[in-house]
Image (cartoon, rainbow, N blue to C red):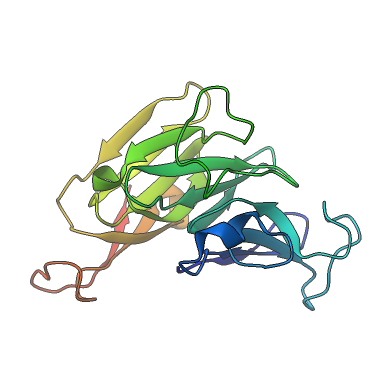
Length: 201
């Protein structure tokens, strides 16, 4: 039930909150777990939040982790599913992403479907970054870096198994990426020199 905090282009602070292993709370607006929150830098509720008087920006999340904004200012989140599907979601104010009633893409859903889904064995997404018209998703269990090119929708894996579990990814200098491995936390298989901060072009 880890999470992220990040300042958005609007100057507000966003925080992802897992469901704390109580799935039904993700649909309860009176409980902050299973949500993405939006607040002022001082921790107050912004006047233009979708639910008056509430920090809740979106709901129906199991374990949202990575946060990133694209060149149009749209918010994206990478989310760990439970047993079947991990998700990349386009986050809209007041959006309900279906957990715990649904996981992954569901035809005819009354909830917002993910833009991309992966089997949990291929993802377990953590960090998320945006640069060069592309979203980059760090995958833990999947041991790879996923790229999603927004202009054409192409979804590709990189470095599969090469570095082990990848915890985070952020834009680096001069158009590069920084990736952080996570093999020494008791869930991975440590390699010589782990863990590593890697720079890739």
